[in-house]
Amino acid sequence: MDHTHTIKIFSCRGSRYLAEKIARSLNLELGKSIVTDFSDGEFQPAFDESVRGATVFIIQSTFPPIDNLFELLLMIDAAKRASAYKVIAVMPYFGWARQDRKDRPRVSIGAKLVANLLHAAGCDRVMTADLHADQIQGFFDFPVDHVYASSLFLPYMRSLNLENLSIAAPDMGGAKRANAYSRVLGCPLIVCHKSRERANVVGSMTAIGEVEGRNIIIVDDMIDTAGTIAKAADMLMEKGALSVRALATHPVFSGQAYEKIANSALTEVVVSDTIPLRARPDQDISKIKVLSVADIFADIINKVYNYEPISPSFIF
Image (cartoon, rainbow, N blue to C red; front, side, top):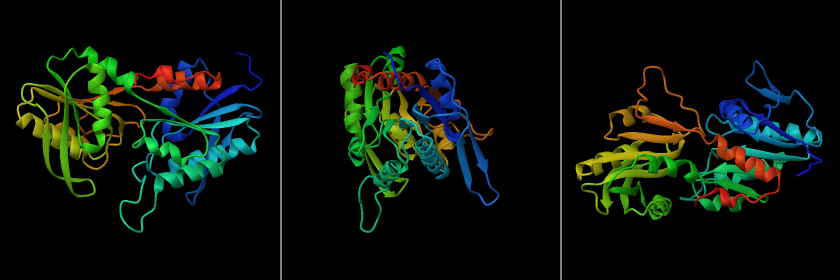
């Protein structure tokens, strides 16, 4: 359709690798921007070309450090002050999403605060993938395009041609997501039940469902320390599984995650590139396979820009 507002794609520093792929998929040049770093640790991003009257998409996953989030906020503010028509934050990984409720007294709700910050900066719309909890969309007072990576992962799962396939949820909270995959693939569901000793430390674990003689794929929205995934894989193999793979959208991979994956019973860990792998040269990543979400986000950006529905792009 004809537009009076041009489309421009920009990137913050943390997600430039992904923004370049998205721009290529859209047959667009990545917009020019610069960041000035000051000796005291402050920084100031700036657009190196006009954005007046343009629909501006700024791509940045907000994984730690906090500079990634703040750089995005500064870019949104700069675009608004430069008279952009619309400013859309493309956040493949929405950081702080696990802080979505008060789970104990006197704590903040970080996900809601991030939503407020984006609104205050002048953001008109957010695109993100596989939120930790769907209801986080309700924290925003403007549209949220929630992208599902199922259209990326399901073809890969089918390409494995695994017999006696079962889908597993690593915990009760992931049962809904795992059930959606098992329903589409027409295979049984297994639910792992865990108890945590403390944050990021898994205590005991067991499985609900038929495990023996099955090729199992554990699905989750993210892998952080890999403690849950590794312990689940070891437990399932002990119960007679033929193989265990893990599939997750966001490879947070903090702490000893790479070592835990390498030393676990997992055959393979499949993730997307919403967050870059940040392994040291001496860390073993041979079990990790990365699939790109660039084409998915390019498709959604194109449809939003052209006022087309995005729901047909998703399997579930």
